[in-house]
Amino acid sequence: MDVHISVTGEQTAGEAESLADWLRGEPGLAGVRLTGAVPAAGELGSVADLVTVAVGAGGAVSVLAASLRTWFAQPKRSDVRLKIRRPGGETVEFDAKRVRGQDLEAILRQVLDGGTSEQE
Image 1 (spheres, rainbow, N blue to C red):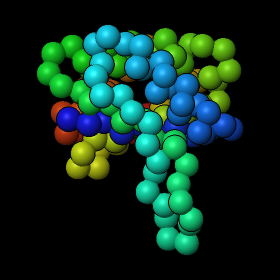
Image 2: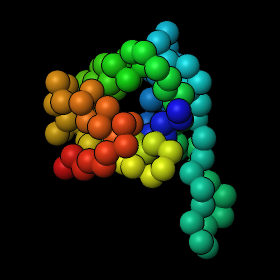
Image 3: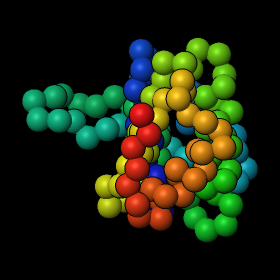
Image 4: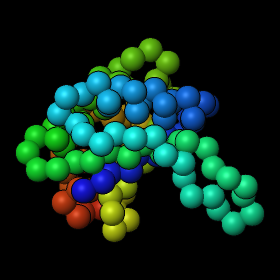
């Protein structure tokens, strides 16, 4: 299953590229790629601001949660917000200021298992 991670913040494309590079370094994650969001009506083209991660069975969700927790802890990540969406449209949003490391994996599992959650 592919998980799509949208990055918002002051430097959306740069943060998305940083996150994609970070996740590519995780041996437990496969198929990490940086893609562009679908342009809205009236917009021209797209910016590469969407990170897509193939998450299969096993510990991939745990690896993704741990990697996101560590990425958020890096300097200059306090204003970054992520929106994670799985096929079917279920989403979860959180930001670096409010995410608690012990909750991140549970939130991801809820969304990936088909539930909807909003973390403000």
